[in-house]
Length: 396
Length: 153
Image (cartoon, rainbow over all chains, first blue to last red):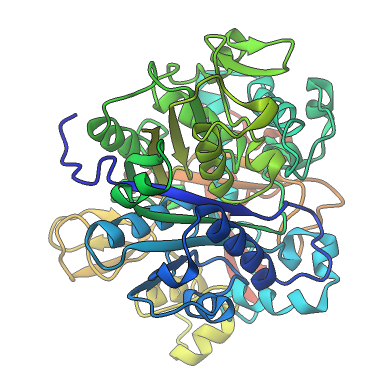
């Protein structure tokens, strides 16, 4: 530990609420999903809604803004509200800093996801989602060119570079997908539970070669919500609250997708350096590991950059720590990787599923996927360019 | 011969990109089939995509400078599905997209497609040169395979 971290263990996550994650939420709007998750989280926390004085809602397409959510839930007076960029830890850090600095005492943090017309055939047929098409295009009169290296295409481009530099087989990416699917089978909320084999992975439809459909997270409708407050207040609610030990965002200053100098230094490296410097536990001490998996290449990056494996060695690492009976990674026979199934199989929640499962595991409420006496969790959230983030959670 | 168009006409010629005061010179270059990369008059460093200042020394004295467009493929992928564009038919085969390390612009890449080459030959390390095709009635920069010393074209 060498960086300032005055918030260490001072903010607790005392409420969890979710919907299921599905490929079709029927007639429920994004606001309806968010409301369900928020109500579940508030009830779970045991805190009365009148005590919520902060609302933080991620800026997801179609999701209600913090002022709308506050109105829907009929909250009282709010002294901090914001709509941070998507990906879970941006919202987490915003909520934490608001509480720690005294802007408010108790925050409702929520994330709602709605499948957009461009990433789901059934969503494309829903007239109530058509307005999202205009939001994504930024008001342009024609669609972007196939050659535009947007963030999602860039992961494929850098995956190709990874294969080129380290001469690794596609099976290394496949292991990420297999791990998530096997874990999702133990998670009732997960969208994709059908068993997956390596043969099945290798035969899956190519989307952007070298990445296939199973390398990309699965668009879903769903929502997650969290209640955060001071650890002092949390201790009055529960003897062993889950606290945020350290959390950070990270990016290199020059982070344009196709101009990144190399895979050797990007946002994940900045996160790892900052998080490690603020945490008194690291990879040897943790009980559950949450490497983000919006694209399989991101997971390989987290495994390597957190220090579990050398560059190019994530596939071999997973193979060496593979539990044949469970069909997934168990690091040193003990530490699972995304036991909820991750974004690839639970659903594309941009890391909120990882955060929720970390808290669930540390509360020791994960049922038949519970890690024995789990006390610490390491989360690597987001990707390479502008949304890398990390957090260490602890059970007090 | 430079094709002079006003700002409104420039925006109309490239409806699929958000052109602004920083990138307008770059896209005017496309109309003249010139690849213009911003170069700092004070520290000589190049940057791309176009920015309001030089990220290296913060100078505002930038000159959009024509470059050859020769280079080497650094990133490559083959799209089996993607955004629509004239001449791109995913049903007939994957569409290659590359990011190219430009020979005469150290540290800068330019991204586009590679034409007139079987998609399986579009791989990292491929030497390429710049060419132009037409997209929606405007010039569009692309790459094609470049002959190297002792190599075949």
